[in-house]
Length: 259
Image (cartoon, rainbow, N blue to C red; front, side, top):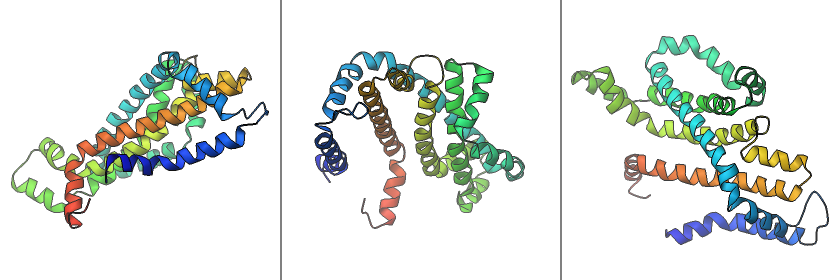
């Protein structure tokens, strides 16, 4: 399938919805639902220039720090708990308790410990994004083929070598699945933390526009959040396809060479 065709197949529904929104709202005089044309004009004025530097860049930095910490923590603990079964059984109730606690419920606690600054925002992102990575890593480590462990034992590989050359490559598809889910959760946590913390970021911009009854700017911020998340997902997909090219090729071979 050509690149142009893939893009058209992916974007025709959003384009159609935007066209319908444009037509329906063209003559709108409702203060809360301004015409899409005005929203897009505001979007271009705010987000294509200064907004990237003043709002998007701080959000991206916090997201990168929190999400990166979640990946390191989730994969590291996941490998340990996936290989030491008794330890995973011991801490599983704690993991399930923390995983089931919504981020919005943890937010007041994070504010109490870390204040309203950047540390609180990064910590909240890291906390809520860790669980999908952790649980998927545990499952991925547990799903390694037993014959691979037997081969490693026959070659007398050290534990570090087994983890590097057998466990992590075998668990990589599930780790990436958890990381993709964690990325979406991280964006939600980022916006939520910016709405209550110190100024700066996309979430604070949206809330500030709503409080100032600048609904056109508010809607432009909502669209900016969606575009931000969409672009992050596309970048993640590119990285995943590059890193897991071997796995996709092997899967295609198992299904008769069709990709």
